[in-house]
Image (tube, rainbow, N blue to C red; front, side):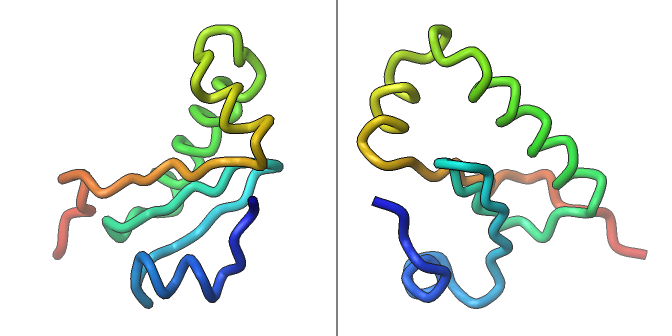
Amino acid sequence: MRRSTQELRKQYGSEAVFTRLDDVVIVHLDRPTEAMIRERIAEVQREVRTPEDCPLCEQMRLAGGYEVVYYGSELPEEN
């Protein structure tokens, strides 16, 4: 089931950034740069095009979609 932005904000907080791609929501918790967001979108799009490489992803997609959460230490450098 696809969740609303309000539901996502409630779970992930007001600072989270969301990117929706068909049945996938990319959740960015680590204040990514625009370049990082583009790279993540490309990575997820590759996975969506080849679901046979990820049976769990395909199962979740068929069940109504899923969320990919980035929360790592890939913080942009501060000046």
